[in-house]
Length: 107
Image (cartoon, rainbow, N blue to C red; front, side, top):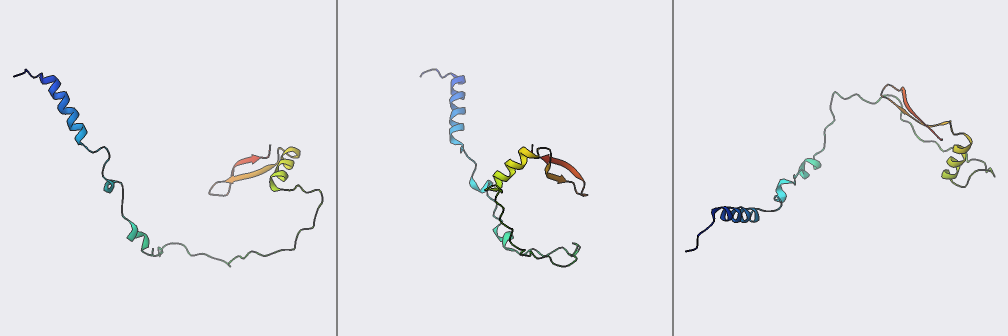
């Protein structure tokens, strides 16, 4: 017979083993069927604090008067305000205690 180089043979065997393995893991490993859990109604925690005070409803106020020098859109109004009052605060972020931590200006 023909002499067999064991080094080439092991590389070919390794390649064959690699090709035999699935390229992707089965879908079951990625999919968790928690549909039944989603359908279950969550019971509220009895230790959770209950809401206090009266329920607040939105009231419809009087219509605004028509002003001729108003910008045609919100974006145009922000642009105008940003150019006339660039240092005015337009957004403030609060921490959990209500203290202002970041303030964004129009400019």
